[in-house]
Image 1 (cartoon, protein in one colour):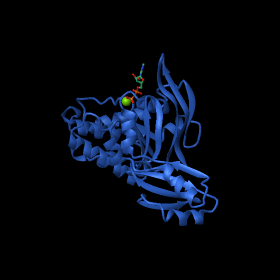
Image 2 (image 1 turned 60 degrees about the vertical axis):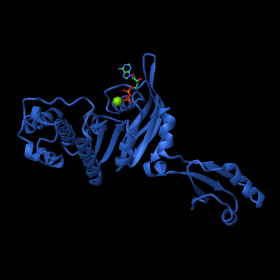
Image 3 (image 1 turned 135 degrees about the horizontal axis):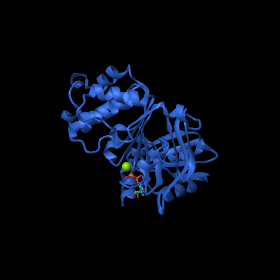
Image 4 (image 1 turned 180 degrees about the horizontal axis):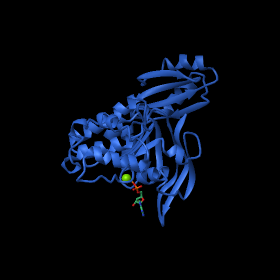
Length: 295
Ligand code: ADP
Ligand code: MG
């Protein structure tokens, strides 16, 4: 099942094209990072999904269906800045949040425990560190145990300890089976926390997929021929690749980034009597992708 699928989403703010036809989908149980530099359209996209903004064109589905109030209730988010009362305790603030959301009134001890604030639940919000405030915001999202969380730059402004705590919490929620969609401008963060990624650049999708695959510091060349066995034999005498894999009647050759020479692969096959019916350079490292996008 797909948790979210967006199709050709566009958003203009007057003349500014914040999203220029973005499509991707988020599978259940993933930690999905929307990665891009400031101004690439991440918050706009999340705002559309949560019905805070209207798209200019394009569509999206939640849980494979047209989005409505019921589907959005399965999503916890703090996109709209959480309004906590500074002079009230965490406990009291969560009681108010639960009342406003009309969910999770009985869930407060559980969410406090999850974000490790049980000991401090009766302290005033104003005495909290930034990291604790952010954890309380996540606790508020978790009220009523939604199966999906949408977080916009969840570690922004935190110190290293606060950052580590939030990342740990996200991983823990993932292990419990939650799907988490999070925007980030930090490659490092997506690398550490996310299982999947969509990279945005100036409102356009650069690439989407499994972080490990996109991250793999290797280029992959996929080749195919009518006689796949003969192709495999011939590849045995080709040099330069570090690994090979046969998949769906294709052979994937793995090369250290930047060492791939597609022409010489083609020539090698041709010289050995095989005409390729498929030849594709598939993936670059996330580092390289990110370099492309930020430069
Ligand atoms: P990100 O979250 O990736 O930093 P945003 O979605 O906030 O990106 O912004 C994408 C683009 O849209 C930017 O160029 C930004 O200046 C512009 N933008 C965002 N919100 C508004 C708005 N309310 N009015 C006009 N332009 C906006
Ligand atoms: Mg943003």
